Length: 318
Picture 1: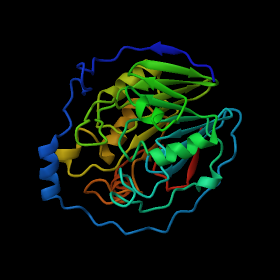
Picture 2: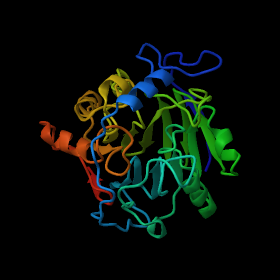
Picture 3: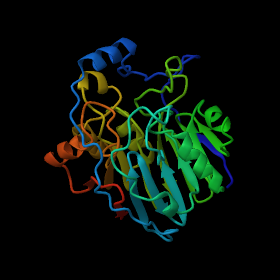
């Protein structure tokens, strides 16, 4: 793949030491985390739900068809024009620095690992364990012929695991690969993998520009004016991947995670032809149960173009 870069200007978001959300509520700090954990009243989720009907994606999708398969959580397989792209891939049992503790999987991936087709590009939105899963990335890297695209200051984490090639993007920067262009766009969130590294790396969304289709992957984000700015800069996407889960309690989660109502509003602001809900149904990361986001969004007067898929379901995007 041949790469090149371009740049679109977005607000300053780095103070020389750490990244931040410009002109937006900042994510809650450590004392607020303690308050949340001490007062948390999480909804109950089943220990495991055996309702996933795994699918076998085609090896490639040629021509103008755009196929999007929800694997699980924020992992979506995008197939178009002969290219295969994965967003925030995770096949691990837990989202944690340790394999024996931390939030565990409540549903199987919708695509079995051995049925995954060749992957040309992986997009990582930020370094949280449910979005940057090193065991999964190592397995993808071992298959070969895959480019990894990550936000600013994330590459060293992958390169330390000998995961290559890694392409680093800041907000407004672009990467041209064979057949499509990746644009790094703002999100309202934060980063950390430990206690002392908060916001030392960037978080982002991506716009994927194919010759015939435009796809927006929001990553993790609170509700933000960036949606309207992204539409103004790139046009309305054919497909938007919008997070709907891990939104309770609102006093704590609102700056970093949209609730279902906000996701529907984001769909409208983007003018997306179709949106697919992500960040739900697999891991319980907040006080809302794994299927509460689905219940909430199905209770809304949402447009038919806002899809809530099961793990393994796919949609052909017009």
